[in-house]
Image 1: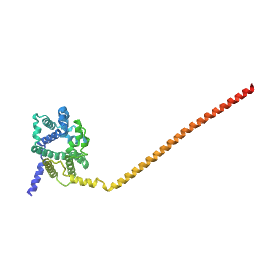
Image 2: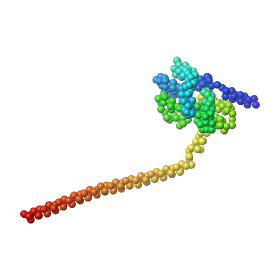
Image 3: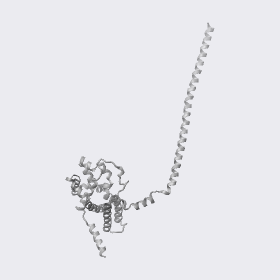
Image 4: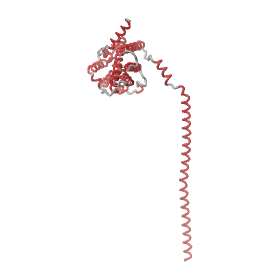
Length: 322
């Protein structure tokens, strides 16, 4: 009984935890460090500090920007938080331009980065929940909208990665998150589904308990991935089973192949008949062209013979008159 009470108290304490300033600072540091580790990011920071700063803001506030666009709100609304933007800008400057590269070298150490990454995962829970709650206030009965906004709010930085790359002069469409979904995007989508179901009373669990379980899973799994150096998703076996069951379509492979062969045969016969028809029509046109030519030649010969006969008759009449 005491254990249950302790867990409930821990859940309430986590739900009432403030993200500003420590957790927000951790989120900004990890986000800007992720940008710096992108290929060519250091070169862009030397060539165009403005483009580098704008990319950093997209990494830090990409979720709020994307969710705002989806809800028909101004995409510059996140910039109205002057304190957050100033704090993110300070961290951006220190990560890229600190003398001796001191901040990046310190935060890149595994123990400190492990703590910062865990704190960033805590903020992910609040972002997903905030997006679901915001969508629920406007679209109370739309489960899909709540899932979409919660997903965009928690993983917006990854979902708009192609736009962020364009800011840095890079175009890599093969890195689209919808084509190759990374672990943060997948786990954010799962969290959005869970919180949306809880918000609409389809998932009978209290919100603070769900927040506790989801946050503990995020932090524990992120720590495991960093310590082991593995980027494999824990949902890979489930994804493989679902894909093989629903999306391979193996029972219809033979039928599909037969239909394709018949379609190919029909196309071939159609093309053959078309070519033969065109050949015969071309021959007919050639014959039609020759006929007028022959008739014109015959007409010319006939006129010449008639003229000769007339001349002979004229000559004979002249002789008779003479």
